[in-house]
Length: 209
Image (cartoon, rainbow, N blue to C red; front, side, top):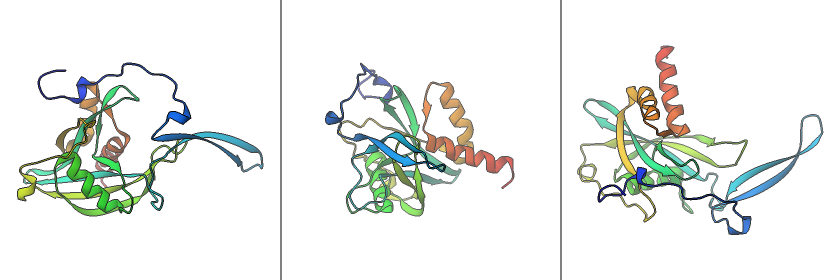
């Protein structure tokens, strides 16, 4: 481990092995039988989270947290090691919803816990599915404005769990596409939510939307 403060890049995968369904805590495998448009019966293998609250339409939230600065809006990002790909990933703050929580409430809580920032919800997206050919995991993207002039956003105090090692940084929103390219060249993986947002900004710029 480098230095006294643990960093996301200090983590590494030690081994991988098959996981028995009886030992899985967070996910389960599902075999679905369905009829295709031609009437033929087929099967599909997929995964599901086992953590979605009973009455919740979503598993979690992704947070588009915008820091309002005199130099222009900046997007809050974080670096976090993800064992399934054995890489540090560039992500937006995100998390699972708790029982009885709305997407907006979850976003405000997760933002505070993971980054220390206090924000105000401005928009909640339609429900989005992360990888519908593989799993049923879904989320709302929640837009949150962070007023940097507030005292609570000066002395940040994240409330990370003991197994969370998150490095927080921000980048000018207008430079997000170029920043994603730069970070990938440095060996980081780009989370699809970050990449899609960057692509959207770039498409809008190129086509004058």
